[in-house]
Length: 154
Image (tube, rainbow, N blue to C red; front, side):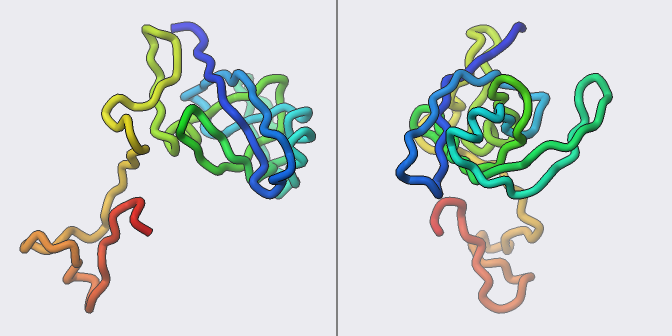
């Protein structure tokens, strides 16, 4: 398939006076997290929230800073995530791609908005409690008056 890249914009929602950083990120569905080089973290003036242990592809383990929050924007879609600070290029992992409902087009070698939900991001969620047999949006098995609230209405 080859490498797939995406033009994204990264910004610090706590630093509204800072300019966003526009980058070309390597899209990696095999990675979970957003990874950013140290120079990007410095440009965004990110706070280190914690230290995380990571396992590298070659089997090594190491600890790296975890910073955030970061607003990630792809076209009209955006999400908020933390990032592992390591490497020499921005790596867009599966978590932010799923959050923005983006898909990889192998034939076009690009990231794109999911064609099944072109207007707003779609999230697949599973309810632990089924709806009542009457089809009501109220779950009778939860006890009195606990609504099931559709995504995006709160």
